[in-house]
Amino acid sequence: MQAPEKPATAQDFLGFDPTNPPDPNQIDACVHCGFCLATCPSYRVIGKENDSPRGRIYLMDGINTGEVEFTDTSIQHFDSCLGCLACVTTCPSGVQYDQLIEATRAQVTRNADRPLMERLLRQGIFNIFPYPDRLRLLLRPVSLYQKFGLQKWVRSTGLLGKISPQLAAMEGMLTEIPDKAWRDTLPEIIPAQGEPRYRVGMLLGCVQRLFNPDVNEATVRVLTANGCEVAIPPSQGCCGALSHHQGQEAQAEDLARQTIDSFAAANVDYVLINASGCGHTLKEYGHILKDDEQYRDRAKAFSAKVKDVQEFLAEVGLTTPLSPLQDAPLTMVYQDACHMLHGQKISVQPRQLLKQIPGVKLREPIDAALCCGSAGVYNILQPEVAHELGQQKANNLTNTGAQVIASANIGCYVQISKHLEMQGKAVPVLHPMQLLDMAIQGQQLLPPAN
Image (cartoon, rainbow, N blue to C red; front, side):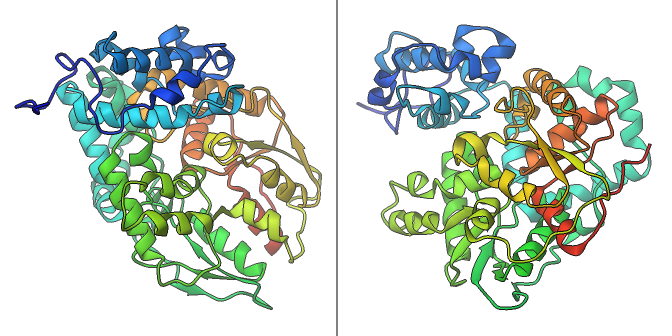
C-alpha cells in the first residue's frame, strides 16, 4: 500500500498503522469478565466503560478491525489510562494489558493531531524532563520565581488554572529546590564498609537526582554499610521510563541504549534502582529493544542484572545493626507504588526491611493497591483524575494513624506530599532507604514542625 502523502491525523486515520499495533492475540485473550473494573483507578473516578481496561481493549479491537475510527474521542480514553498495571495483577486470564496500552500509546504518538497547547506541553515535557542538564537550566529561573515570591502570588490568584489546568498542575508540583540540585555530588566509586560482598551499579534517575537527591545519598550509605561497593557511571542519564510509559517509542529506545552503554564498563554484579517506575522500565529493556539486532541480547543481559534496591537488600540481608528511630514505638505505613507492586511484583520485601528497624509498627491502608495519581506525568496531563486519586491516597494513608509514610518512588513522593499539604496534614514522606539510613546512623526521626 502506498504511504499517504502527509501524516495521518486523528480525524482522518481509520486504523492503527502497521508498526507494532496492539497484538490481536493479546486482545482476544480478554474474556471481558470485568474483574479489572474494580481495580482500575480511572474507571473508579470517571465511571465510564471506555475508561476501563476492558473498554479500551474493545476500542483497540475495533480500531484494529476497522470497525471503530481512531478519533480524538478514542484517544482521550487511551490518555485517561494511568498505566498503573493494577488490571494486569487482577486479570484471571493473564491479559498483557501493559503491552497493549504501550503499543497503543506509540500509535497515538505517531498519528494523533493534538491541540496546539497540548502538543507544546508534551514537547516541553519530553524535551526537558528526561535530560538532567536541561532540567537544571530550567530550574535557574524557577529558583528566582520562588525566591522573589512570585510562586506564592501566582498560586494565590488561581490565574494559571484558568489559562491551563495542565500548567497549573505542573506548577503545583514544584517544591523548594534543594541546594544539591545544581550538580551531582556522589563520586563515581564509593567503597564498601568492612568486608566487600558485592559490587553494584546505581542509577541516579533524572528527576530524583534534582528534586530529592537525599534519597540517592541515603541509598549509597545503606549499601556501603552493608558491604557493597557502589559504582555510579557519570555518563548515565534518564533510563527512558517517562518516555516509555507515554508512548515516546524512539526516545525510550535511545535512552535505553545510552543507559546500557553507560554501565557497560562498570563490571557490576547488579544494577540497582531506588525508584519503582525506573526499575520497571530497566527490567523491560529486553522488550523495549526487541527489534534492535545490535542491542537485543545486550538489553536482556542488562535487565537480568537489574534489581530494586529493596528487593536486593531483602535477598542478600542486612549486615549492619539498626537503631530505633525514636524512643517510643513508631507507627509507619508503607505506600505501594504501582510499578513496584504491579510492575515488578515487589511488595513483601520493603515491609520486611522496615520491620527490622526496632520499634516500627507497620500498618496497612485500605485500597493499598490503588494508584496515587502520579503515574509519571499523568498528574500533569490529566490533573482532574489525578487530583481525586491523590486526595483518596492521602486520606487512606493518614487514616492508619501512621506517624511517617514510607514511599519508594519519586513521583508518588511528590504527589502524596502535595496532597498532604493541601489537607493540612504534617506527616513526613520518606523513602525506605532514608529510614534505613537513619536507623544505621542512630538518628532520631524528629516530629514535624507545626
